[in-house]
Image (cartoon, rainbow, N blue to C red):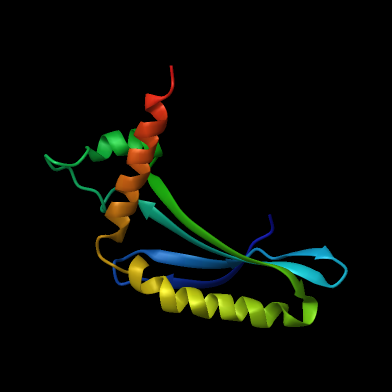
Length: 127
């Protein structure tokens, strides 16, 4: 997939989200317009060792040093002349709706905890 960085946005919680254009031509003058939002959350500095939470070292062993948060928004069969307008609208909508949530101080910790929980559930099914 070909991705072009549109914008990097620094959030109030110290994280940075990148917005990428991952659109591709489908047929003729028709496009699949795709907006990717990606945030790399380092485990260190976000997740501290406490009695009621998993150890940061255990999380890093399971998920790695960095946990990725990614959202993909797509619109299909868009006229080439409307592509940029549709993409700009998707960016504006993402900023208005998602950035307040992603900027919450507890978001990075919650996302890592959710990913770790899903990892443990997958591992429970393995022989």
